[in-house]
Length: 585
Ligand SMILES: Nc1nc2c(ncn2[C@@H]2O[C@H](COP(=O)(O)OP(=O)(O)OP(=O)(O)O)[C@@H](O)[C@H]2O)c(=O)[nH]1
Ligand SMILES: [Mg+2]
Image 1 (cartoon, rainbow, N blue to C red):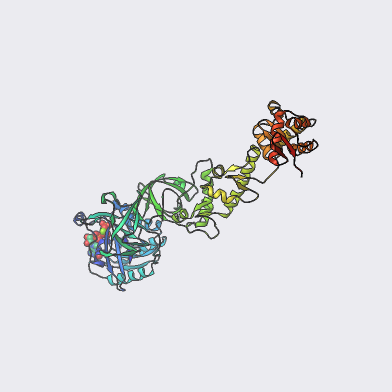
Image 2 (spheres, rainbow, N blue to C red; image 1 turned 30 degrees about the vertical axis):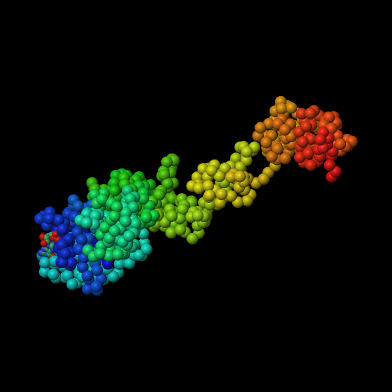
């Protein structure tokens, strides 16, 4: 199936044409028939001579209903631009064409209608000239009369050619069905309709109703009024939903595949407008699919801007949309460059962002997005609408990192560790959490992955390369050695230790570095004092008492007792009741 929308000025015969082509009535409302005017979107379909089916979305031409017209053409890939032979090009011919062009519609037909009322040639020539500067330049043209039937066979043949040229979207493409109608059917509940541009919906599928994010189940499906189990885009679809009241669903909402789209209220876009973005109004309406969302525009570069939306909508990078200023009735096409753009808080951030975006293509790929974000989960990239780039660094379970960014992070981690070591030499290393915060990473797992020699991970901290004890420790130990030079076992008392600077963290670092022996609380000797004591004690008659040891070592009980216990523990001496002997080596 293919779906074709109508477009064109009010009363130019769009609905009459759809009626003549399909035998169905696109103007369903009583008011429409009474006033001879399309107010709401109309839907009709037929089989073409080739057997292929085509559905029409018939839009209103009246200038008051442009928003409805945009909701109708938004998700549709092709258009039938209708111009009346007897009136020629009119304001809404122009306005509709500008909108189609801004939305990037490139497939369609130019139909000169009401050909029984006037020679179609002048209108045809005029319309062709208008289409020349747009994406619809050079489309096939047909002159028809819905009253006499003249030209209808040519039109159906042209529709056949048009629809056979249209690309067939991938059946596994992400699903986004913009709702154009919602109603209740007695006995079945809520039904929403829309044009499915791509992807597949099946009965039983779970979808997400945006913007509220509610999960809904597809209870039944219809396409062209026939029940179906599964439907592939492009198609007109009616979805019967379980789990939602019809008055909670409105045009402009969307049914999307779970985890397939970024729900966002802020996007950076490229604007396809003759005017610089700085000259555009700051308040505009963003039209995409069937949605019309007020936005605030902040110009970035000459053709780029940041849009802040006042409703959350499901978007992908590369999406086309339309900005409209209802006051001036002007439109501009936009391409979504980033669906999760960085906040612009610091001075100069806007200008920097503008320079960055200037280099981006209209459809940035995963590589650019990953470079911008540095590190992302694969899922985040997918819901932006991008495939993971082949050069990305993969980190379990599902992280992707830009290689350059990853290298920079490695360097920064080394710098952070070095800085910590310089600032707090006695407590080197930083916790994974501190490193995570300083590097602005979303997970400690990533920090751990960044640790490579000479950095090492030990006890939950990232340490730098092993080095000797810091200078103030070396200096304090030197003072201790000088202090005990004459009497090597007369350990300074607590007050003196403090004067030497050997307390707290310095002492702990000296002990950790193996530069001193801490025998007891406040009993500290230079490293090696134990071996030296063993040599002195070996000169005594064996075994010896504490008193004899104390005298030989020239120290007090305060030192001798813990020193001897230390020697016992090290196996340098061995105890037997009140006596000890130095062990033979
Ligand atoms: N003679 C003649 N009249 C036509 C033809 N097509 C449409 N009309 C008449 O033109 C008027 C407008 O036709 P519609 O089909 O309602 O026009 P429309 O473009 O759908 O109008 P809106 O939906 O309101 O924009 C109606 O009175 C039709 O009967 C035609 O081929 N020949
Ligand atoms: Mg109509």
